[in-house]
Length: 123
Image (cartoon, rainbow, N blue to C red):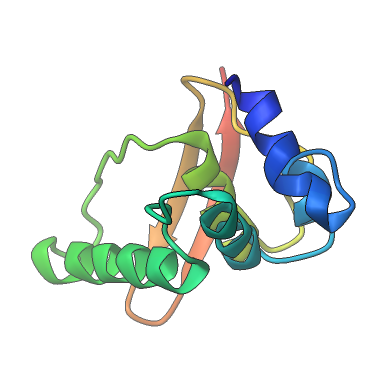
C-alpha cells in the first residue's frame, strides 16, 4: 500500500482524506492515536507514547550536550512536521507545508523553551 492510500484509509473514518486534513482539525498526537487505531497489529505508537519518546529524546540531548551545541538529527518528515506544529510560532505553516526530502529545519532547544528558527529550508 502506498503512502497516499495508507493515509486515506486512516483518515476516512474521521471525514478526511489525508494527514493534512486531519491536522487541520486535531493535534499530531490525535493523528498518532488514529494511526494506532488503524494498525491491525496495534504496533503503531499512540500519541502519548510518541510524545513521551520524543520528549525523552529532547531531554537526553539537553543532558548530554553542552549549551549552544550544534546537533544534527536526521528524521522522517512526519516527525519534523509534528515538532514544527508543536513548537512553531505562527511564522511557518507545517500543517500545509510538509518538509521536503533533504530540507533543513532548525530548532533552538534549552531547558526553558524549544522553538523553531527555520522550517523546510532547501537552499
